[in-house]
Every structure is written in C-alpha cells, then in structure tokens.
Length: 107
Length: 437
Image 1 (cartoon, chains in turn blue, purple):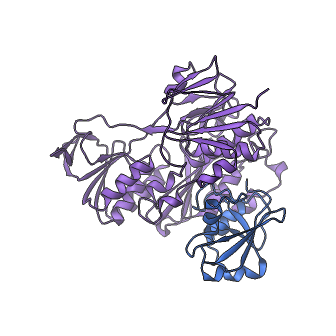
Image 2 (spheres, rainbow over the protein chains, first blue to last red):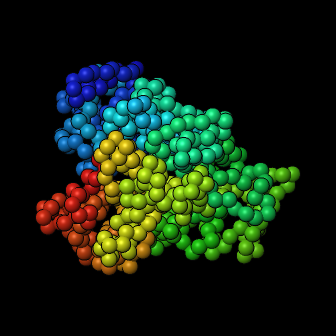
Image 3 (cartoon, chains in turn purple, brown):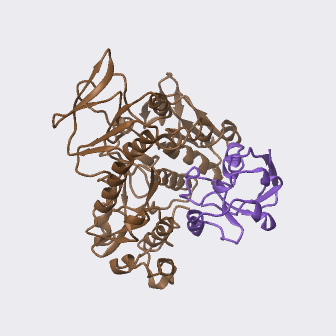
C-alpha cells in the first residue's frame, strides 16, 4: 500500500498507508488528520481539501481536470503551481513516498 | 465557574460542523452532539448519488471516524432523542429520561420528508429518501425493481431517477407543477434537465399527482394519477419536499414559521439558543427582492444544502467562541444527474431576466439570472468555471450586465478580479465573502 506523508504547516509529519483507489483526502479524513476539511465530500464543489504536492513529485499524480482547475480558484490559501484538490488525488502505486503539504487554512 | 456547555441537537452536517468548528475556534467548554440515528454523523448528498448507485460504500459516508470525536473533545451521543427544552432551567429532557444542562443550545434538527397522504401510501415498496437507513432500503430494492414511479421532480427525485435508469429500471417521474426543480431553477435549466431525463429513457408527466397507490398482498403494484392513468410500479419513491423539524422549538415557546425563526446572527429570540441548517429560517441579503431594493428589507429564507449547514455552523461556533458576526454567505448548491453536474450560485428564484452563456446543445452552459438588472444567481451545467466566478461575483457587487454575461468573449474572471473600489460590496463594511470566518 503506498505510503503518503502529510506535512502540517508547522512542519509536523504524519505518514499514512493509502489504499490504491482511495483519495489522499479520504485517507486523511478517515485517519483524523486535521487540515483537510472536505466539506463537499469529494464532489469538487468546495476547495477545502486543498494541498500542495511536493513539486518534483507532481508528475506522479493524475492530470488535473478543468473542474479541478476552476475550483482551485477558490482556495483559502495561496494557489501555487503544485496546488491540487486532494479529493482528486486517487492513489495509485505511483504514490509510494508521495509528500503532501497542508496549507495554512482551508476556509 | 464551571466550563460552559454547548448542547447541539442533531448530528447531521450542521450539528457535526458546529462541534468541529467549536474545537477549531479553541472553545474550552464542553461540547455535546446529540443525534437520534444509531450511526456516526454522515454526509447526505451521496445517498441519492454515488452511494445509491453502489459506487461508494458506507465507510466513505462518515464525516469523521469515531476517534475524531474523542480526540476533539466532542461528546457524541447517538440513538438519543430530545423530548423537551426547558429554557428557564437550561436543561434538555432526553427520551432516555435523563436531563442535560446547557449554557448554549444549537438546534440543528434538520428536516423530515413530507408524507404523501393518499390511500395506499402505507404499502410496502412506497419509500422516502432522507436517511442512511432509507438509502440502504432503496439500494436493496433497486436491484429487484422493474417499474419505478418517482413522485416529485426535485433534486432528490431526479438524482434517484437517473440512478434507477442506469440500473435498467423503467422510470416514470410525476410532478404536480409544470416544471422539474421549478422552485429552484430557471425555466431554461428546468427544460434542459427534463429533456435529458427523457433522453435517458424516463417518462415524465407534469401537472399531475398521485390519486392513490394500489397493491397486492400488502406490496405496491402501481399508482393511479389524478388524471386517471394507471402506472405499474414495484417501487414508488416519494420525494415531495421536506418539513423542518421545529417541534422542540415551538414547544419551548420559540417562534416558528417555515422553520425556526432566527436573526442575522442565527439566534432565536432566546439569545442562548441558535438554529442552523435545514431547520432554520433566517434573513438573507441573497433573496431576490432584497437585492433588487437594496439592503433595507432582507428577506427570510430556509435553505436545505451542505453549504448552508456548514457555513451557518461555522458562524455559530465563532459566535459562541466570542467572535459574533452576522451570517451572510453566498448560497451554493449542486446536483449530479446522469453525466450532468448542475451547480447553482446564489438564489435564482424571483429573477426577471435570464441569459444563457454557452450553447445548451453542447451540454455545457450557464444561465445567469437577474432581478432589476442585478445578477442574483447563476445555474451552471458542466461549466464549473462559471460557477466559481459566480460565487466570487455574488459575494460583492456583481456589476455584471446581462449582455456581458451572455457574451462568451467577455472575460468573467477578469471582471470578478476588478479592483475592489469599483465593486462595492453588497454587504457594507464587510470584505466580500469573508464574514463568519
């Protein structure tokens, strides 16, 4: 099972085993990682599961849809080139060792 | 003095969010979240969408895992009903016979399905859809159903219908008014969705209602419409709207009129009692006539949505934690039907002008709705970028004309980003879209 590291804004790190087919958002919610709100439950409606993917690992994540691009306009924290909605980061074997940075704020 | 106690009645999306936000706000008192269902707080939207379709499981419905509540100092009480509110003694009476003391009370009691009062409504196979238990029953029945009648062409009915069609059932939707989702969307959007459902294979009858339901051996066999047609059915879904759960509030002497009446801070007449989510009737600058006339006369409204539940919960949690702000969030909604995603920003009911951006034939378009020349809401179909811009525009003074909205070469994003001085906020004195945060 791919191991994904979640890095909090204060630098604290948590590592989760994310089953293939499960999103980085859902894994965080079900494991009680604070910092991902996900108020719409993964429908790409709210932009409260915003994360930054380690820049050189971006290529391992699935491509961004137009819906996701549009919704990233609505993030509470700054949108950066490595911004993603974690509900769209559905784990594959490629996710082994992925590092995700949580933003300062989701709302 | 003992730590203050916040009791939250109702463990749906609004109740859950109040408890979670109190923790985020650093509230030091005790938080009690009381729900009458036997399960963890869960999300409702998938119940008529992916969960019903069997694409997601129950473990994806929970808002948070069980451990979240203890680690966030939230005392979750489930399978418990509240039978009375004693405002003088600040106590709740519980179905179990116990009493709970509170200092702040949050009513997040939600709503229940409106019942269809016709002969045969009690037959086996005539079902509602609101709770996880309802969805489990429907999921089970859906596999065996061949002829389904959906009573009511609102969001829930149409979402269910699209899932049922995909399951291979015959689906007949009957709607007493002349339009699908007529209470919440423009005629253009309504017509587009009606056509889509017909294209997917549903039959749709407007302007007719259920006269009676008939069955054999206690099981439903069909529906007789008020215009005299016999429709065979082994499953009938009743989705004709909801009624806010306001009995506790009424019996406690709080005013109720299509929901529990609250002020712009979401407080009832008792300043220690708030009401939020589906059960709350609140004043808003986003109701149409208020916008046409300016802010003098905010209209009252009651909304049934995730956004409303979550944002009102945050507003109340901040208030209890000592940061009171009036509630003025832009309402938004969504509905998934077949391959169509409908996203609504603002409240479009009451518009006097509607223009379309994009070509409905392409399956990607938005309807921009105006009242007195002012943008009041936008309905987007498979066009999320418009929806995002609309939410931004509606949080301030939109300053968008119908001509600009209809002109696809006009850059809406640039319009939404124009300097704040040229875009005075609808909400005077507040930065647009940032109150209650």
